[in-house]
Image (cartoon, rainbow, N blue to C red; front, side, top):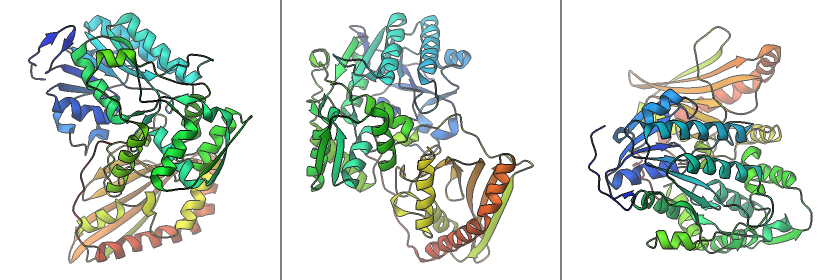
Amino acid sequence: MVPATLSRGGGGYAWGVRVLVTGATGYVGGRLVPRLLERGHQVRVLVRDETRLAGRPWAGRVEVVRGSLEDEEALRRALEGAEAAYYLVHAMLSEKAFQEAERRQAEAFARVGREAGLGHVVYLGGLLPKEGKPSPHLRSRAQVGEILRANLPATEFRAGPVIGSGSASFEMVRYLTERLPVMVAPRWVLNPVSPIAVRDVLAYLVLALERGPSGVVEIGAEPLSFKAMMETYAEVRGLKRVILPVPVLAPRLAALWVGLVTPIPNRLALPLVEGILHPLVADTARARALFPEVSPIPYRKAVELALERIALGEVETRWSGALYGRGFRLEDREGLIREVRALHTKASPEALFRSFASLGGERGWLVWNWAWALRGFLDRLLGGPGLRRGRRHPTELLPGEAVDFWRVEAVEPPRLLRLRAEMRLPGRAWLEWEAREAEGGSLLVQTAYFEPKGLTGFLYWWALYPIHRRIFSDLARAIVREAEAQAEAPPRGGGAG
């Protein structure tokens, strides 16, 4: 990394900071990195899998260190020479015992950061209720903040629901309001909360480097109830909705309902629901004093901007970019069942790639959409992600992104796309397309892979083989038909709402 020119005053850096970003492939981190680069900072990222950076416009402008927060040797490499760092990770989706995992990660980061002489860590945590017991998720976020502040010069931003295109809180409000004309909701939806637009979160994070370590800073816009958040969304969309609060509805039951109706999985829905069991109102006095140039936009404006970004296909990052568990990768080995189809077409490889790379989400799967929907519904009942995660962008894909109940394992325009299954299965599965040049056009090679787990896995595969054979054959033919018919489509850019 080229030496930076620093201008430090009042404990902060004016520009040119050597800064480490953890969580750079997450919802907030993926938006923060390009904004730090725009400010002239020199950015290093710590990622488990560097292939997940492929396709991001800023990927070639950052230094990459491969590793995790529990890998102290990787942390030492990542923090070497860094003046500041952003701590933007959590373990809710990747670990069942997320509280213990988050404590271990924070302690490792603090220990290595102290050894490296880190001058400033900026952490994004959550608001804590002024009255009542915080949820396990919020307690864990607070514990991480305490560990970092006790060991390093730190700024801990505490935020309520983050509202922006693709954020989990916004998607929960969006889908509940869009899908349910009449809602029976727990009485705690009347509790006030302080939402905040993602653009304001990013503004605070960027400016934190210039202010220096500032301790705990609560941030948020004007508070309103979760019921009012849904009603405001309905007004913006021109929908008529009736919300009926009732005295009793257990958080876990409410979370299961959110998981069924929205794209949010139960493991994420529960902490989101538990987070509004008590009022979560930000005391923004310190934020106004330390960051007078940031005036958080109202919730209604944040909703309008998010819907605008979605309509334009300009969603920079999405909550579903976070990985489930440790994941796995396709390996060519014994016991791997392959189902291959190859079709010749007069269409170009580029046209084929555009067709299969835009499958899923609101567009669907070209054929047998009712069967895909039924499989997604059954997966939701079993605790899987189902189809409602959708996709971030209608045509663009990045490694590691979610596409319905798949995860993008590899994407190489205009040649290859491989999706890894994340639905509940007795084994591991992939679906892959290749567009190969051929005389007179190109060749589409579509391969379904399945690695069965025990006898149950084999029985599952062969029981569903007749259905899969028909669906996958029809899908390959539909991709070819569309590729031959479609016209060239210009790429679309990204946004910040």
